[in-house]
Image (cartoon, rainbow, N blue to C red; front, side):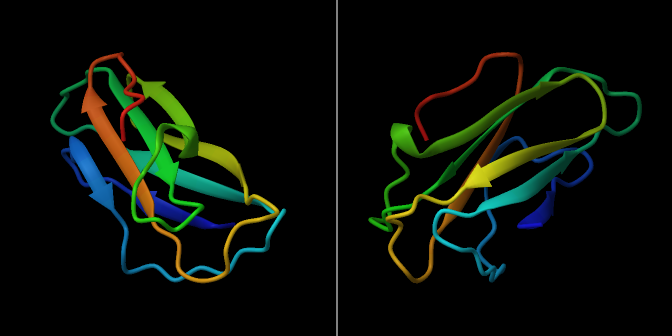
Length: 109
């Protein structure tokens, strides 16, 4: 398991960067990742989440680095399988999660 990342209640809408996590992954390996979202006080709305991983470590989240998109209308845990590129550089790599109200996904990180 790569990790579980939880949005607050009410959910954070916008960019979340999880910079305090240190994970070890293998080039070419696949890892499970979970993002938990929830609703409070009966506020049920559609949330859309997108995630990017800066595999080339250039400190820019690029459209080509998008690793998942999900939509939910209730409290949910979204699980994805992330495949680390075989040529990924060694060292620290950043991840960005975006959560927004509504059903539209964003390709622009």
